[in-house]
Length: 140
Ligand code: SF4
Image 1 (cartoon, protein in one colour):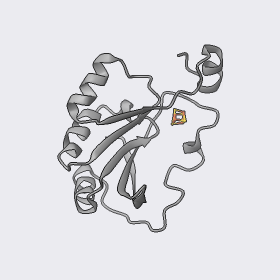
Image 2: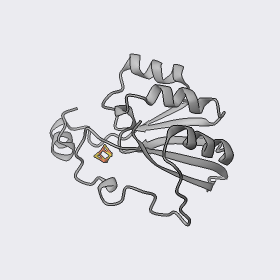
Image 3: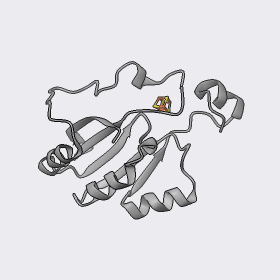
Image 4: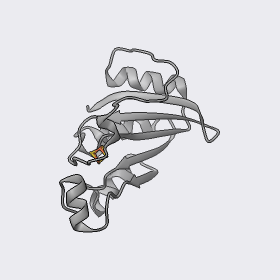
């Protein structure tokens, strides 16, 4: 499991929202904000828990978020991602995957939907192949 951080707010456009942050990325973006700060910049409080998936699920169950965002670095690199999604789907929240899109093809998108993802946000760094390579060190 690549999840290294969880943040939560009650004030996300009138809804409760939790964000699970995943370690690791296959891009090396010049302007990557995660390289500056890996955790939530705006957190007013911090809480430390024994870091395992069951405890994360327990926290989420207590917080009852309307939305759960999967983000951080690149969630799709986590070999456990589908299992994680299947487990958090049972909490009844709207699940949003934030990704650089490098691993998304039709079959993978179908698998994500089947696992329980409701929405995917793809951050496209550049449409021009040369600019993309320069900015991310990865070709499109
Ligand atoms: S894709 Fe996102 S997490 Fe990965 S290096 Fe680029 S900005 Fe950072």
